[in-house]
Amino acid sequence: MHIAICDDNIADRKQLERLLKRESDKRKARTGLLYADSFGDCRILSTNHMQYDLFFLDMTVAAPDGLAFALQLIENGVTAPIVLCSSKINYKEKAAALAEVPDSILYLDKPIITAELSTILDKAEELDARRIPKIELRSEQKTWYVEEDDILYAIQKGRYVHVFLRSGEEVPVLSEMYNFYNTISAFEHIVFLNDHGLINVVHMDHYTPLAVFMKDGCRLSSNPFVMKYIKSALQNITL
Image (cartoon, rainbow, N blue to C red; front, side, top):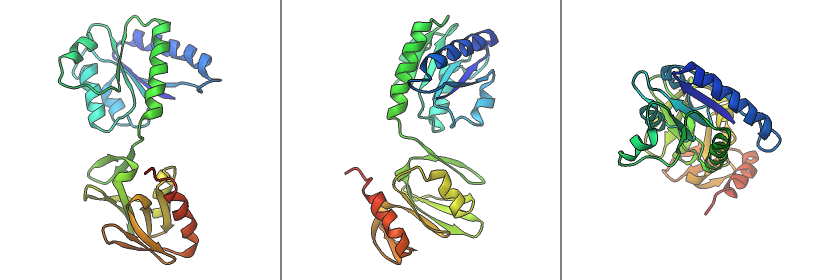
């Protein structure tokens, strides 16, 4: 598990790092090692937040505070659990005043007690196992964070892979098709057709040995070799 600590109190950051190192040693045989990166400024973490499986936040010196930053992360596509560590700010009490707070936000009081940290990590692992991973699509103007089945298909056009989304948006990603496919190949509904296209079989209407026909009417060239991969991907669809 890859963890981000963002706390403007350096002593608290170092203490949490030490506690997580001990937890990592205890958990490595059961759930794997814990890797922690520390930040004293949320602006730095904001530039590369999607790589983390868990966040520990407590920002009290300047805006945004820990709760406000947690909500920003969620708005920017983060689905990983976020632990708000209360010191000067009682985050649980502050969150209770809001209309709706995601279940992925957890709470931990400072000074942090080892047993409570262990319980939080167990809960975070449960939440992480259930969460749906996001795919980052970055154009030159904007970044999208989408789920696997938000993608219909992708087509190579010049230097860009154009990704067509269920929302109707078309995202131009500067990449070659094979390289782009490698970034999402772990997703079970995605099938690489050739250097010019890939598809999500959830949105496929039908296929022949030489072409794939999507539900929106798009036709993409294929070949007989790909048919076995399409059949395999179709078996992964949960009805």
